[in-house]
Length: 139
Image (cartoon, rainbow, N blue to C red; front, side):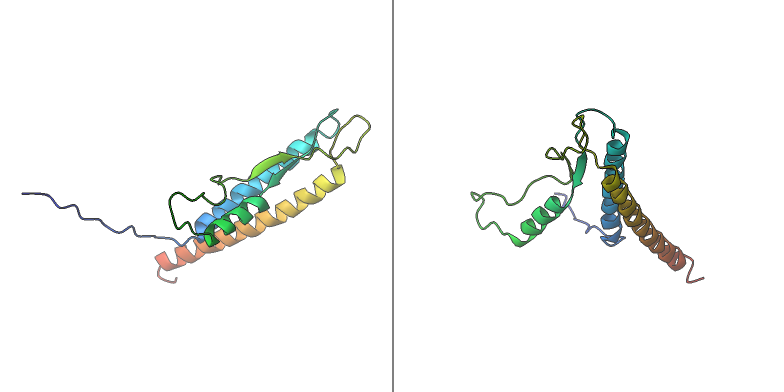
């Protein structure tokens, strides 16, 4: 008697919204760390500011979605990287000591990042409140 394996379909309890919001929060957290590091090193000689590059990853993933491989011998599209890249801004020098940190720019980026993080936090909080309401039966 052979045993037949029954495949149970995976039930997706939540939509992709939670994972998308989580990825956004991870990006904002990494961005905050990089900006804080830049600000902390504003007086460090020859320090070059860093920046989180997420747009390139987004463009690559968009290209991956649109591109189709018709043969396994074809090259794959895009990159396998799933994380934003932290790159050094090497072409800028704002101080006579070779430092590449523009404090005003960094503070502006920090404020923008904080607004982005707060918006994502509010959105995910709203999602959890909706789930809580459903679980309680609308009460």
